[in-house]
Amino acid sequence: MEAIWDTSLTLGKLLYYFLDSSVYKIIPKRKKNVAGEIVLITGAGSGIGRQTAIIFASLGATVVLWGINEEDNMETCRLAKEKGGVKVFAYKCDCSNRQEIYRVADQVKKEVGDVTILINNAGIVVGKLFLDIPDEMVEKSFLVNVLSHFWTYKAFLPAMIKANHGHLVCISSAAGLFGIGGLTEYSSTKFAAFGLTEALLFELKMINKSKINTTIVCPLFVNTGMFDGVTIKYPFLLPLLEQEYVAQKIVNAVLEEQNYLIIPKRVWFLVILKQLLSVSMTSVLVKFFGVDTCMDLFRERMKAKEAVTETKKKHQN
Image 1: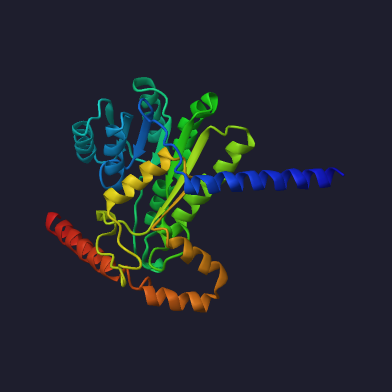
Image 2 (image 1 turned 60 degrees about the vertical axis):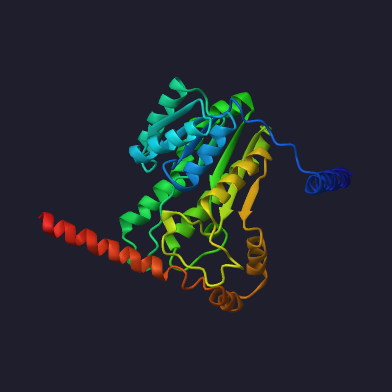
Protein backbone atom coordinates (compact mmCIF):
# COMPACT_ATOMS: atom_id res chain seq x y z
CA MET A 1 0.00 0.00 0.00
CA GLU A 2 2.85 2.35 0.87
CA ALA A 3 4.51 1.67 -2.50
CA ILE A 4 1.26 2.47 -4.36
CA TRP A 5 0.82 5.73 -2.45
CA ASP A 6 4.47 6.68 -3.00
CA THR A 7 4.21 5.93 -6.73
CA SER A 8 0.98 7.92 -7.09
CA LEU A 9 2.48 10.87 -5.23
CA THR A 10 5.60 10.79 -7.41
CA LEU A 11 3.56 10.66 -10.64
CA GLY A 12 1.43 13.55 -9.41
CA LYS A 13 4.51 15.67 -8.68
CA LEU A 14 6.02 14.81 -12.08
CA LEU A 15 2.81 15.89 -13.82
CA TYR A 16 2.70 19.13 -11.81
CA TYR A 17 6.30 20.07 -12.59
CA PHE A 18 5.88 19.09 -16.24
CA LEU A 19 2.88 21.40 -16.59
CA ASP A 20 4.70 24.10 -14.62
CA SER A 21 7.74 24.03 -16.92
CA SER A 22 5.51 23.82 -20.02
CA VAL A 23 3.68 27.00 -19.00
CA TYR A 24 6.99 28.86 -18.69
CA LYS A 25 7.97 27.69 -22.18
CA ILE A 26 4.93 29.55 -23.50
CA ILE A 27 4.74 32.43 -21.02
CA PRO A 28 8.19 33.92 -20.23
CA LYS A 29 9.12 33.64 -16.58
CA ARG A 30 9.25 36.94 -14.73
CA LYS A 31 12.86 38.01 -14.38
CA LYS A 32 14.14 38.57 -10.87
CA ASN A 33 15.56 41.88 -9.75
CA VAL A 34 19.31 41.78 -8.98
CA ALA A 35 19.62 45.38 -7.80
CA GLY A 36 21.45 45.26 -4.49
CA GLU A 37 22.62 41.67 -4.94
CA ILE A 38 26.35 41.09 -4.47
CA VAL A 39 27.68 39.37 -7.60
CA LEU A 40 31.19 37.92 -7.55
CA ILE A 41 32.76 36.95 -10.89
CA THR A 42 36.03 35.04 -11.16
CA GLY A 43 38.15 35.58 -14.25
CA ALA A 44 36.61 39.03 -14.60
CA GLY A 45 39.59 40.65 -16.32
CA SER A 46 38.52 39.81 -19.86
CA GLY A 47 36.16 37.90 -22.13
CA ILE A 48 32.88 36.56 -20.76
CA GLY A 49 33.79 37.59 -17.22
CA ARG A 50 34.25 41.23 -18.20
CA GLN A 51 31.07 41.40 -20.28
CA THR A 52 29.00 39.70 -17.57
CA ALA A 53 30.32 42.14 -14.97
CA ILE A 54 29.35 45.13 -17.13
CA ILE A 55 25.79 43.85 -17.57
CA PHE A 56 25.26 43.07 -13.88
CA ALA A 57 26.65 46.50 -12.94
CA SER A 58 24.17 48.17 -15.33
CA LEU A 59 21.34 46.29 -13.56
CA GLY A 60 22.23 47.84 -10.21
CA ALA A 61 24.05 44.89 -8.66
CA THR A 62 27.10 45.29 -6.46
CA VAL A 63 29.83 43.65 -8.54
CA VAL A 64 32.98 42.04 -7.15
CA LEU A 65 35.70 41.31 -9.70
CA TRP A 66 38.33 38.63 -9.20
CA GLY A 67 41.22 38.38 -11.62
CA ILE A 68 44.86 37.37 -11.63
CA ASN A 69 45.86 40.32 -13.83
CA GLU A 70 45.40 43.49 -11.80
CA GLU A 71 45.55 45.83 -14.82
CA ASP A 72 42.88 43.91 -16.76
CA ASN A 73 40.70 43.70 -13.66
CA MET A 74 40.87 47.46 -13.12
CA GLU A 75 39.92 48.02 -16.76
CA THR A 76 36.81 45.87 -16.24
CA CYS A 77 36.08 47.92 -13.12
CA ARG A 78 36.31 51.14 -15.13
CA LEU A 79 34.05 49.84 -17.91
CA ALA A 80 31.47 48.55 -15.41
CA LYS A 81 31.32 51.94 -13.69
CA GLU A 82 30.92 53.63 -17.08
CA LYS A 83 27.79 51.53 -17.66
CA GLY A 84 26.20 52.79 -14.46
CA GLY A 85 27.80 50.51 -11.91
CA VAL A 86 27.82 52.37 -8.61
CA LYS A 87 29.43 49.68 -6.48
CA VAL A 88 32.19 47.79 -8.27
CA PHE A 89 35.11 46.27 -6.36
CA ALA A 90 38.23 44.72 -7.88
CA TYR A 91 40.43 42.16 -6.13
CA LYS A 92 43.52 40.38 -7.34
CA CYS A 93 43.07 36.64 -6.79
CA ASP A 94 44.91 33.61 -8.17
CA CYS A 95 42.15 31.01 -8.48
CA SER A 96 44.71 28.20 -8.67
CA ASN A 97 45.66 28.90 -5.04
CA ARG A 98 43.24 27.60 -2.38
CA GLN A 99 44.70 29.66 0.46
CA GLU A 100 44.49 32.83 -1.62
CA ILE A 101 40.86 32.13 -2.54
CA TYR A 102 39.93 31.76 1.14
CA ARG A 103 41.95 34.85 2.12
CA VAL A 104 40.43 37.12 -0.55
CA ALA A 105 36.97 35.66 0.15
CA ASP A 106 37.28 36.72 3.80
CA GLN A 107 38.39 40.17 2.64
CA VAL A 108 35.33 40.47 0.37
CA LYS A 109 32.98 39.43 3.18
CA LYS A 110 34.46 42.08 5.50
CA GLU A 111 34.68 44.91 2.96
CA VAL A 112 31.65 44.28 0.71
CA GLY A 113 29.35 41.75 2.38
CA ASP A 114 28.02 38.24 1.77
CA VAL A 115 28.08 37.22 -1.87
CA THR A 116 24.62 36.25 -3.13
CA ILE A 117 25.44 35.43 -6.78
CA LEU A 118 28.68 33.58 -7.47
CA ILE A 119 29.86 33.14 -11.06
CA ASN A 120 32.76 30.72 -11.44
CA ASN A 121 34.12 31.84 -14.79
CA ALA A 122 37.92 31.64 -14.40
CA GLY A 123 39.43 29.07 -16.73
CA ILE A 124 42.53 28.10 -18.68
CA VAL A 125 43.13 25.88 -21.70
CA VAL A 126 46.29 24.11 -22.91
CA GLY A 127 44.95 22.74 -26.19
CA LYS A 128 47.72 20.23 -26.90
CA LEU A 129 47.48 16.57 -27.79
CA PHE A 130 47.27 14.39 -24.68
CA LEU A 131 50.86 13.12 -24.62
CA ASP A 132 52.22 16.63 -25.27
CA ILE A 133 50.57 18.23 -22.23
CA PRO A 134 53.11 18.93 -19.45
CA ASP A 135 52.09 17.32 -16.16
CA GLU A 136 52.17 20.66 -14.36
CA MET A 137 49.67 22.10 -16.86
CA VAL A 138 47.26 19.22 -16.24
CA GLU A 139 47.44 20.01 -12.52
CA LYS A 140 47.07 23.77 -13.14
CA SER A 141 44.01 23.18 -15.33
CA PHE A 142 42.28 21.20 -12.58
CA LEU A 143 43.25 23.79 -9.95
CA VAL A 144 41.72 26.68 -11.93
CA ASN A 145 38.86 25.00 -13.81
CA VAL A 146 37.56 22.66 -11.09
CA LEU A 147 39.08 22.94 -7.63
CA SER A 148 38.58 26.71 -7.50
CA HIS A 149 34.84 25.98 -7.74
CA PHE A 150 35.08 23.81 -4.60
CA TRP A 151 36.88 26.54 -2.65
CA THR A 152 34.63 29.42 -3.75
CA TYR A 153 31.51 27.36 -3.02
CA LYS A 154 32.89 26.50 0.42
CA ALA A 155 33.74 30.15 1.05
CA PHE A 156 30.40 31.71 0.06
CA LEU A 157 27.76 28.97 0.25
CA PRO A 158 27.41 28.90 4.07
CA ALA A 159 25.97 32.44 4.12
CA MET A 160 23.62 31.55 1.26
CA ILE A 161 22.42 28.45 3.14
CA LYS A 162 21.88 30.47 6.32
CA ALA A 163 19.73 32.99 4.42
CA ASN A 164 18.27 30.38 2.03
CA HIS A 165 19.02 32.85 -0.74
CA GLY A 166 21.64 32.81 -3.47
CA HIS A 167 22.70 31.68 -6.91
CA LEU A 168 25.69 29.59 -8.03
CA VAL A 169 26.77 29.81 -11.67
CA CYS A 170 29.22 27.36 -13.22
CA ILE A 171 30.72 28.31 -16.58
CA SER A 172 31.35 24.86 -18.00
CA SER A 173 31.51 24.22 -21.76
CA ALA A 174 30.15 22.15 -24.61
CA ALA A 175 33.45 20.33 -24.04
CA GLY A 176 31.96 19.33 -20.68
CA LEU A 177 29.15 17.51 -22.48
CA PHE A 178 31.24 15.49 -24.92
CA GLY A 179 34.97 14.88 -25.17
CA ILE A 180 36.89 16.80 -27.80
CA GLY A 181 40.20 15.48 -29.14
CA GLY A 182 43.01 17.95 -28.55
CA LEU A 183 41.20 19.29 -25.49
CA THR A 184 41.58 16.34 -23.13
CA GLU A 185 42.62 18.37 -20.09
CA TYR A 186 39.99 21.04 -20.78
CA SER A 187 37.14 18.57 -21.42
CA SER A 188 38.07 16.66 -18.24
CA THR A 189 37.89 19.77 -16.09
CA LYS A 190 34.65 20.98 -17.65
CA PHE A 191 32.98 17.59 -17.15
CA ALA A 192 34.09 17.75 -13.52
CA ALA A 193 32.83 21.32 -12.99
CA PHE A 194 29.48 20.34 -14.53
CA GLY A 195 29.22 17.27 -12.29
CA LEU A 196 30.13 19.20 -9.15
CA THR A 197 27.50 21.90 -9.66
CA GLU A 198 24.79 19.47 -10.74
CA ALA A 199 25.42 17.28 -7.68
CA LEU A 200 25.35 20.37 -5.49
CA LEU A 201 22.01 21.38 -7.05
CA PHE A 202 20.42 18.14 -5.86
CA GLU A 203 22.18 18.31 -2.50
CA LEU A 204 20.69 21.77 -1.86
CA LYS A 205 17.25 20.41 -2.68
CA MET A 206 17.92 17.46 -0.39
CA ILE A 207 18.52 19.80 2.57
CA ASN A 208 15.49 21.94 1.62
CA LYS A 209 17.40 25.01 0.49
CA SER A 210 15.27 25.50 -2.61
CA LYS A 211 15.83 29.27 -2.69
CA ILE A 212 19.45 28.76 -3.69
CA ASN A 213 19.56 28.35 -7.46
CA THR A 214 22.24 26.92 -9.72
CA THR A 215 22.95 27.54 -13.38
CA ILE A 216 25.37 25.45 -15.45
CA VAL A 217 26.47 27.17 -18.66
CA CYS A 218 27.79 25.13 -21.61
CA PRO A 219 28.71 27.35 -24.57
CA LEU A 220 30.39 26.19 -27.74
CA PHE A 221 33.67 27.94 -28.60
CA VAL A 222 33.55 31.63 -27.68
CA ASN A 223 35.43 34.27 -29.64
CA THR A 224 37.83 35.33 -26.89
CA GLY A 225 41.61 35.24 -26.69
CA MET A 226 41.34 31.95 -24.85
CA PHE A 227 40.50 30.07 -28.07
CA ASP A 228 42.38 32.27 -30.52
CA GLY A 229 42.86 30.30 -33.72
CA VAL A 230 40.02 27.82 -33.31
CA THR A 231 38.24 27.32 -36.62
CA ILE A 232 34.76 25.97 -37.31
CA LYS A 233 34.24 24.02 -40.55
CA TYR A 234 30.57 24.97 -40.95
CA PRO A 235 29.96 28.15 -38.89
CA PHE A 236 26.31 28.27 -39.93
CA LEU A 237 25.79 24.93 -38.14
CA LEU A 238 28.13 25.42 -35.18
CA PRO A 239 28.96 29.12 -34.94
CA LEU A 240 31.85 30.71 -33.09
CA LEU A 241 30.02 32.65 -30.38
CA GLU A 242 30.61 36.31 -29.56
CA GLN A 243 31.42 37.03 -25.92
CA GLU A 244 28.83 39.83 -25.58
CA TYR A 245 26.10 37.46 -26.78
CA VAL A 246 27.15 34.70 -24.38
CA ALA A 247 27.40 37.13 -21.45
CA GLN A 248 23.87 38.41 -22.06
CA LYS A 249 22.58 34.83 -22.25
CA ILE A 250 24.26 34.04 -18.92
CA VAL A 251 22.74 37.07 -17.22
CA ASN A 252 19.30 36.21 -18.64
CA ALA A 253 19.67 32.62 -17.36
CA VAL A 254 20.39 33.95 -13.87
CA LEU A 255 17.47 36.39 -14.01
CA GLU A 256 15.13 33.61 -15.20
CA GLU A 257 16.65 31.02 -12.82
CA GLN A 258 17.46 28.50 -15.54
CA ASN A 259 19.35 25.44 -14.31
CA TYR A 260 21.00 24.67 -17.64
CA LEU A 261 22.11 26.97 -20.44
CA ILE A 262 23.52 25.30 -23.56
CA ILE A 263 24.55 27.70 -26.34
CA PRO A 264 23.57 27.35 -29.13
CA LYS A 265 20.50 25.22 -28.40
CA ARG A 266 21.27 22.85 -31.30
CA VAL A 267 24.10 21.42 -29.15
CA TRP A 268 21.32 19.64 -27.21
CA PHE A 269 20.71 17.62 -30.38
CA LEU A 270 24.36 16.57 -30.52
CA VAL A 271 24.27 15.50 -26.86
CA ILE A 272 21.25 13.28 -27.56
CA LEU A 273 22.87 11.85 -30.70
CA LYS A 274 25.95 10.90 -28.68
CA GLN A 275 23.80 8.64 -26.50
CA LEU A 276 22.06 7.01 -29.47
CA LEU A 277 24.86 6.47 -31.98
CA SER A 278 27.82 4.10 -31.93
CA VAL A 279 31.33 5.51 -31.46
CA SER A 280 32.11 4.89 -35.14
CA MET A 281 29.01 6.82 -36.24
CA THR A 282 29.84 9.64 -33.84
CA SER A 283 33.38 9.78 -35.29
CA VAL A 284 31.90 10.27 -38.76
CA LEU A 285 29.87 13.24 -37.48
CA VAL A 286 32.92 14.63 -35.67
CA LYS A 287 34.80 14.68 -38.99
CA PHE A 288 31.81 16.16 -40.81
CA PHE A 289 31.55 19.08 -38.40
CA GLY A 290 35.34 19.54 -38.42
CA VAL A 291 35.67 19.03 -34.67
CA ASP A 292 38.70 16.79 -35.27
CA THR A 293 40.64 19.64 -36.90
CA CYS A 294 39.18 22.70 -35.15
CA MET A 295 42.21 22.98 -32.82
CA ASP A 296 44.91 22.65 -35.52
CA LEU A 297 45.50 26.38 -36.06
CA PHE A 298 45.21 26.99 -32.31
CA ARG A 299 48.06 24.50 -31.70
CA GLU A 300 50.16 26.05 -34.47
CA ARG A 301 49.80 29.49 -32.90
CA MET A 302 50.64 28.11 -29.46
CA LYS A 303 53.83 26.51 -30.84
CA ALA A 304 54.78 29.82 -32.46
CA LYS A 305 54.24 31.68 -29.17
CA GLU A 306 56.28 29.08 -27.27
CA ALA A 307 59.10 29.38 -29.82
CA VAL A 308 59.16 33.16 -29.39
CA THR A 309 59.19 32.79 -25.59
CA GLU A 310 62.09 30.30 -25.74
CA THR A 311 64.05 32.65 -28.03
CA LYS A 312 63.55 35.55 -25.62
CA LYS A 313 64.72 33.41 -22.69
CA LYS A 314 67.89 32.43 -24.55
CA HIS A 315 68.68 36.07 -25.35
CA GLN A 316 68.08 37.06 -21.72
CA ASN A 317 70.46 34.36 -20.52
